[in-house]
Image 1 (cartoon, rainbow, N blue to C red):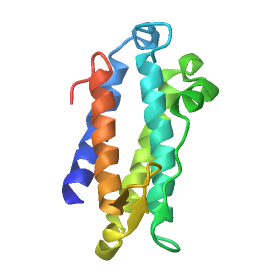
Image 2 (image 1 turned 90 degrees about the horizontal axis):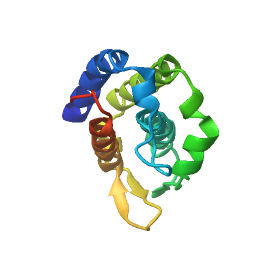
Image 3 (image 1 turned 60 degrees about the vertical axis):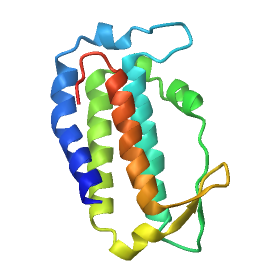
Length: 150
């Protein structure tokens, strides 16, 4: 988990400054009618953080395997209205959620990383896998945002 926490900490240190140097008009431009704008991608990362923070906590409580609930990504982005939300609000939310994730993951007992979790497709993974996948997913989407280099 040390590597994942280090990668996540580095991202929250550098990404907000990079975003501040990009115009909101540029971040709000959609590449196609049914594609997310960069600001919506950042909003999606907030939604991902909300869902994963809950998973990282609840997978440590109760019976195994913890059942990971699927969430409707497009509907979450649409209902959050990220396209009309100021970048500073989304960035603040993204930072706060990821600081919470770092706090939870860094305080998770080593043995809990082996907790079994069942993905929506039925596959069984560990909490450690969920955390690693979360960070990789974030990096993937941050690379899609023009002007952000990680």
